[in-house]
Image (cartoon, rainbow, N blue to C red):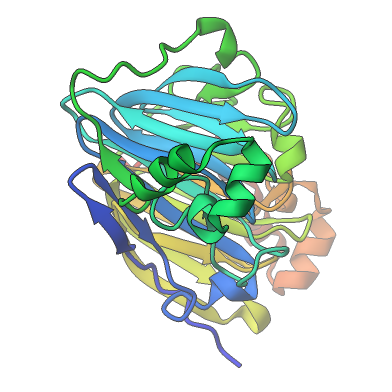
Length: 356
């Protein structure tokens, strides 16, 4: 059965004057369910506060826009309060409790990508709110709440009765939230826009790879990630994940074209992509992108913490490793054609600048 790989935009699930929560639905993007992948976005207005919650899935969070504060509590650990800004990537393993706050004028937008193999619904995140109208306090009876937290009845009624909002609220400007601590960022977040580059090709593009070396927590999450910035009109080499990983791609900025080739050499996707689009490349399928004039930037997760890719063009191409006689026989071409094919792209790695 063929699966629709077309890029999709997210849809609003809920919101308030403090902000909104968006998600991608597996009925519209079938590869989410097929690949056990979840994807969502949180957008907070000024003084917007996303109430404490935990999820049934491990995730990587990526800050798309703005600045703010995140509270993170790993199982049986103390709260970490960190400043976050555009370009930050944060690994969120199972059992992590998080909250998010924006005190700036600019909207704070955070992307969440993760795997849902152990989730209640394949292809979707299910969050469990600790507070709010759908939080755990509203589910237990007053007796259980009182006994569990050793509270009198009047306090229990106040705790439960005052939680009228769902998920996201807007705080009063006078409310003082915890201040971030610089030391809390260590090992918790990596800014992909400021981190050392793993790949840089002049007039081609740049890559920062998120893995267990620069952010060890991704090992617990079981995912790798990268931020790719492709220059205007540049091309990303056709390639595939050679360790059976899925590649989940969110277009951060710009636009361009993408082609994906699958089984039996069939082109299964050929379309334009733009900011806000999400699409998923199945295991072992070959993908390539070409940026429009203003360039193309995307953030991807790969369903392994230390991904390995095979590129089919450029200096590191597998074709360069194969013997000339093998290529002549495989392509059924004479020696001069094989030599011309091999002599091209001898210096470029994975990005190809636009032709002159």
